[in-house]
Each structure stands twice: as structure tokens, then as C-alpha cells.
Image (tube, rainbow, N blue to C red; front, side, top):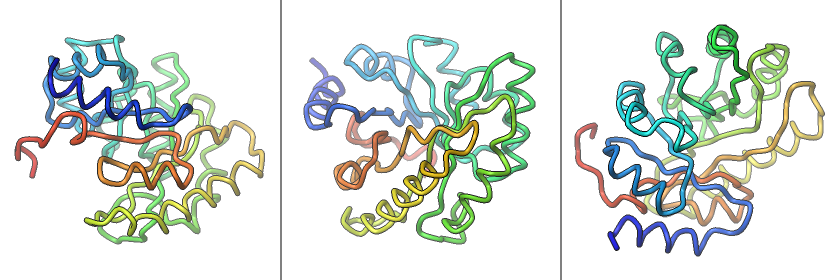
Length: 223
């Protein structure tokens, strides 16, 4: 049994029922991703369009595909046909582009709204105070479906430092859910990565995006 399979079995034994694991597969090979799928994780997260297209050719619909990186509008045409969910929508412009290509592909694209919970100017995501307005503007689009929120939170060594940002995002999630906006289903709250997923789950995450803890340390191709 390989270390990847061991890692997955250990993680899944820790994760409560109702929490979905997205394997963050940045820089990983198709063989590694297939091993993750065989070990029991069916949702694969990709950050880079070119990488995603390459591994999708080998794996296809054996997995559910989540786009978890920053999505440039000129890449939407490649992302929409492949992915089952886009977790990083943070503008009306991007949502309209996704809606356009989802219609051309005869599908309803599930999306999450990315919240910049740390209010970091160098990060993508909509500021917490603007989430409701953005959702109200996007909700009438006919070929996307808002399914919840996602946040990265600031990167820190101590996962406890991320807790306040997860708490705030969960509060926004609950607020939006109570509004009962048409075409908006607050089903998923995607928070937490390899170093912070336990805190994220404690604060209400039902999707966690885990890479290093499953695959081991990645090569420094993009670092």
C-alpha cells in the first residue's frame, strides 16, 4: 500500500460524515490522481487550466472536477466543459462569462463565491461586506447555480490563526441562506486546507481542499 493510499485512509478516518474532501492536485500526475480516486476520494481540485486539461484526458469522468484556483476570464471556455464546480467566482464579469459558456455547453454550472475573508489586497475574492450584493447580481443568470461560499483565509503556520476568518465566512453563509434568494442554494461551505482543515470543520466547513496531506510535499515547479 502506497503512502498516498495510507494518507487518504487516515484522513478519511478523521473527517466527519457530511464533510467532502477535494483532493488538491496541483502539479500531480494522472497516475497519482487515479490512486487518490481508487483510495476513495472522488472530487479532484485543480488550480491550473492547462494541467487540468492534460489530466482530464487520462481520467475523464472517473472524478468530479472542482476548479479551485484563480480563474481568468479568457480560460472560462476551457474550464466549463470539464469541471463540475467552480469554487472561485468573485465578480459579475466572471459569472457572466461562465454563464455564457455553460449555455453553449448545455449545462448548469455549479459555482461557489470566493470570499476574501482576510481582506488581503493581494488575494482574489470578494470582500465580506460585498458578498450579498454580488450574489444578488449573479443569481438571475440562468446557466449557473450558486451553491455556497469558499474562502482561503490568510496563510499562516498556526491553523488557529485562520479560525476568525472561517467564523466570519460561516456567518455570511448563514446570512445568505436565510435570505432565500431565488437560484441560490447555500449547500456548501468550502474552507480549510492541509494545515487548517480540522479548524475549518470545527467552524462549519463541509468541503475541505487537501493536497499536501494526501500527496506529500509537491515539487517546486510553481513555487
